Image (cartoon, rainbow over all chains, first blue to last red; front, side, top):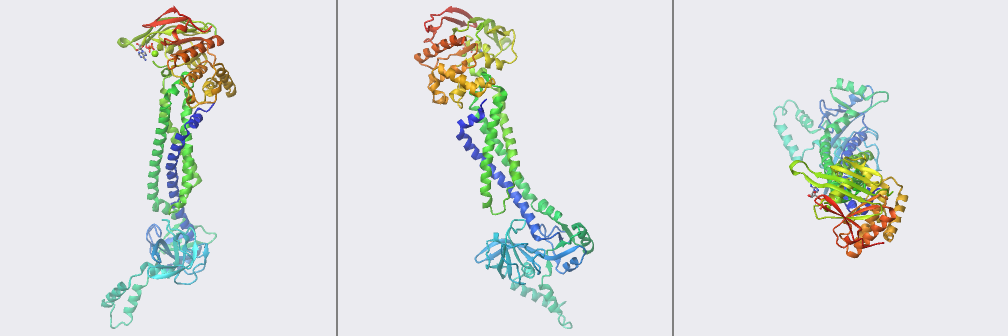
Length: 400
Length: 236
Ligand SMILES: Nc1ncnc2c1ncn2[C@@H]1O[C@H](COP(=O)(O)OP(=O)(O)O)[C@@H](O)[C@H]1O
Ligand SMILES: [Mg+2]
């Protein structure tokens, strides 16, 4: 037996290829959308991986530091480091802002990392060029996605920094590239007021009779100094010592320090379940719509192709073709259309993914799932055409 | 193969029920011997197509008897279970328009029938080519139907009707779209094939050009047939 579907496709290949390409572009968009979601999840995981932490200690009852703002006093980390099972602990600040270079600026997440040596939690685990920060001020390590190069002078708030090292795939959960600077600088940047505001604030304090006490010299200066420093960080990153489970270490910190502590799994839950949940739903909606549109297109094309063949189908039935053979012909054509569409879509997505500003992660498993879903959609879409073909009366071939 | 050709006795067909019922066939009697080509002639609405559809097992007669070759296929009810297989194996159809499958080449249009019956592709194509040769279109064997002339298409359609060696061929206005020379050529081929393959052929027509070629003609009027000798001018 010959393949009726195959012969028809070869005969009307132009129609098939062009609809296949149209369908393929739609599928390309679908695969890319899935890739955008995967990219967001992966950005979140990269953020957690690159922080080098096993535990995140944050302000009590907050979902900080990524999903909510969290503020901790910067002297708490020493006590945490002394807790059993803690191998290392370090302060960290996060601030998403525009980082300027020359006339332009780049959206980045500025990470303030505690002084120490490479491997300190919060530090970039590896560099693709240059070196780690060695001075305590005005040096920066930037992700290459910022477009900065070694030796660039960049501006964060009012201070200038020299880029001394470059990282790769160091991103925030929003996909913004990271810029690492020393913790002290970052704390300043987070709370920095402009000169006018500082003057105003000093004047207000000086005029406050509660501070301006003639009998207590030095009180005013101390008050002003206390107001101007920023003794806060967003989180303390903790590395757990071998032989301890993260939960074993987290529990005493929660109890004794009255802070909220998240393990890696909990943090991932917050990022995926809360931070990008809305985006994920948004993308899910798009996928549903795209699936419906693909189904409609396939159904319409297969229906039209079958309509064009009604007379031939009547003849095929009259000369003894089984209904099964005719249904198989239509089904195979729908599946072939889906296969052409998938190939075109996969190629489109593969070439388009790197062009997107945020990370698009095309997972083979998604492609396989997409392919199977597409075949299911095509099979479903051919049902209408098959029903119509089966209703064709072989007597029609003889005519009136 | 040939056996007794076609025998139809008291065939009735009623469309619809009650007040709106139409008696399209009111007791048709016909006999076509193997190797014989008979004409079936009648005005529009006389029941020609209805008769072909009953014989072709695509509609159910209301009553009567039909015998194809040795086999009684209908006796106040179908006597065969698989009408589709009956059509495929026992009846060849040739239509007014050739109705070739546009996406199959000439050979496969003809070979499709034996293939549907489970014959291997090579064997089916060999049979097709043999008939195409007999009908003198073998040089177009690899062409697509759309590349053929009307006469060539009709010859391919006849080859398709014959390829499973059915005892019966039903031809509905097979010459209508052809000029008189080509129409006569088609009739000549049908006569030749009928003799060569012992096939009983019924040709429905009102084509004045070919009516004189039949040796026997059935006139059908108002759902009833009566037989008449034709001029039989023709092809001996
Ligand atoms: N499906 C049908 N339902 C009802 N009446 C029909 C149907 N087909 C044919 N008829 C009637 O049966 C009669 C014979 O029709 P038909 O066999 O088509 O004649 P012919 O082919 O000789 O023109 C006509 O009166 C026609 O109206
Ligand atoms: Mg008719």
